[in-house]
Image (tube, rainbow, N blue to C red):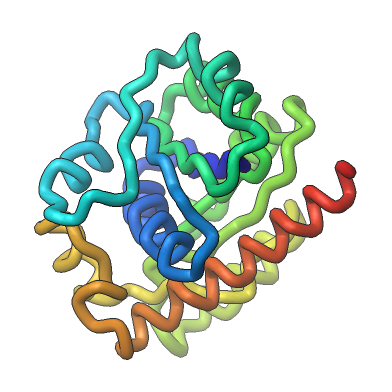
Length: 211
């Protein structure tokens, strides 16, 4: 299993939303199974999972110190582990990034959020872990949305799929589902599908390079 970590020092960036939606998308695309791990004390991902009626993805309750050992046991198994992290706590973020095959850094296209990416990037670089930015909660045709990818590209790779500010995402998260499950032909579902295709390609290239 490859491990994807969702990390950002800034709160409200969309880590939990991405973890939930990409877990469902990965399994729908035949890239599962997916196991979720929630290291955020707020337990938002866990609350979403508890509201689900579907039996997948799995949620694993695991102490932070046990991550390296437990993940090493399933390294050769198919599928993905997706880990949500807390904002602000650099110690926890660094510990989780240490076990990542890819770090996904969601960033809202606002000046404050864009200025705050440096800390997370530095943690990734110290751990020598690949990372990619995902522009989240973007406003269509807004100048800053267009500028965000250019600004972020100065720090590292940026996903080609932008996640726009749609009420569908918040609505889906309230009852343990995702936008793909509610409106599989909608624009939000297409965004998630495109994003997973991009991330899966990045992971495949990274694995090939390591081999």
